[in-house]
Length: 328
Image (cartoon, rainbow, N blue to C red; front, side):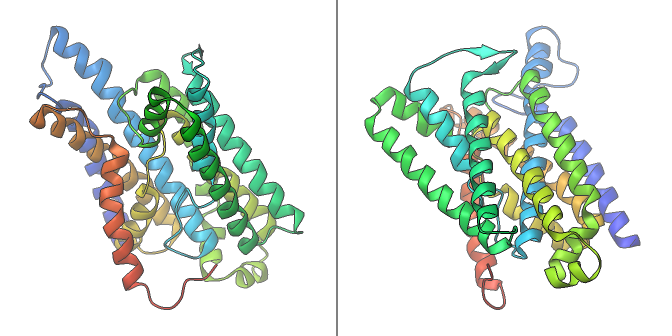
């Protein structure tokens, strides 16, 4: 336990350092003592963007950890159950019809994406309960089916869209934090607070799920209720992130797995470690894309592209090193 506490302390120090130093870097370096326009860029643009990146990364990482515990599989990701596809479908429809409005600082695209995510959650939940109970294999297969169906609808919408709308849909689906500000941070924090606290309180149940559902039942866990809570908490966090930032892949798969190697599989320590590491990882990736755009003088690389470039090889490495088969 002492080792885990020390590791968490080091992660906390590293996270604070990332939050303090990342806003300084971008297309040009801006020091702490900057004044005038540079100060406005530092505090009004870069700082909220770094905070949004940290919050989004933490939410994706916690969701991935929850799904990996639920499915007892380190290859599970926050997008396994089709929430990302539902959000992308909502955004694609909104962009295709060319509607433009915002309510309370929330863009119409983000609202449409979140409605799509909620629709996906309701469909997966409904299909799973129709089969009776709330079995994990049925939940997984329902999510995959919904994900493929929504993905095919997105392709159809792109096909019937003009060049401008099609490009906007593709760009949104790359996942970016370039439009992050304090209002979007405020939209993310309720999802992080509710979902993160719920998963923190369910750390014992997730530990038992990793051992086996039969063991959890023998220890008095209401597995049906706990699975629903984990599913809803993780899905709502994913829906919130995708609605604001677009789909940013692989953060939720890589972060929990790396943290499991660092602090072990006990969710008492794994949950805070995943929260800190996921936030740091996405904040550093976003900072790298800003610096890269400054060095190259070209357009900024969407952070979702960078995480995919890092996550693809990591996924293959994890798959090759995994012992045994892949259980549903």
